[in-house]
Length: 165
Image (cartoon, rainbow, N blue to C red; front, side):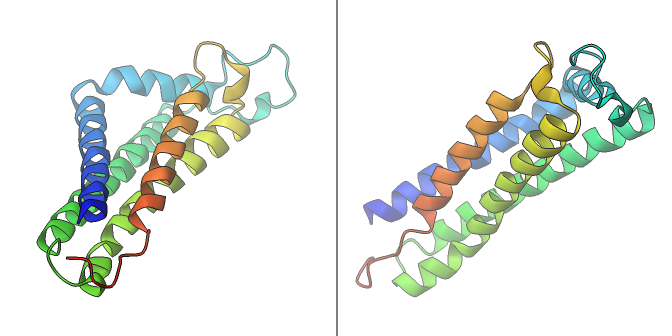
């Protein structure tokens, strides 16, 4: 039972974290939009670097990229909360039922992992050379979240003892 409760507690924490991310991005849209805009503009990367042709100066693309991040965060949040709900409902069931209930949590956590790896570390970090910026560099935060989600996912996928209830 303690492993199940640990899984639910960790997943609930991730779901709450994403709830706050979505709330902050919607209630203070402009702050994080500026982050996305500067990364895509590449205006604080190394001067005269040869990757500047990749910079996007389209405010439409900036908005679409940011809105897609918010939508992805919402999806991850909803999947994680749904996983929490399903796992809570199955907490006293047999191991197979609890494992099946955790499937949504696995999809939600994987969604978050892919977002941080793809949108922030790969596209922002490498394509738009965010790593070159002292001001608009979110790679440490992205890696931290990738690691946290990865660790929670590893706990959630731990096998259930057959007699667990």
